[in-house]
Length: 226
Picture 1 (cartoon, helix red, strand yellow):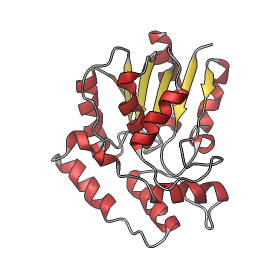
Picture 2 (cartoon, rainbow, N blue to C red):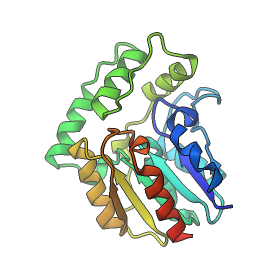
Picture 3 (cartoon, rainbow, N blue to C red):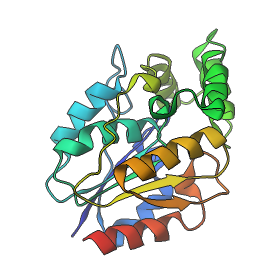
């Protein structure tokens, strides 16, 4: 069975991030790893997209179809050129370094840099609003969300990632949610530079994997490249 490796983003781990994709278990062999620092694994001192990219080399097998959401998409983009993938899908990766100087990107980054860091939960909650995640955080946080929020608090900012902007030797899909212009700008750059296909699925904010039609779009894309 075709392996589908789903890499989650910030704050929430694999179990929370990919709940709707569990329905694809009859179609694919789902691999749902938790990024370093996220539960049930141990905390780490620093969350870093370069470490995530190296970690993916331990997870991914030749022919796998790799899907990365948000920060997980940044690590996937960095790792992909050296991986023998069946395909790559990235969902709103905050790879803003590819579009510095764009007015929408700079406005989004100004807001991100200004988020309050007085508390771990407060920072994560403000980030959810800013990034467009329509999910309220409980107060107090569950133990899993507490560890995820602490990992996010120690996260290297993804703008620093130097994303390779050259076509890849396998199909690439860039997915955005049409809720924030900055992510659409990044999606446009990646689509053009990587020779990627593009899907825009509104209705779920930054959590585009929860949007109507996402699973069907992903299945069509992966099966076409298999």
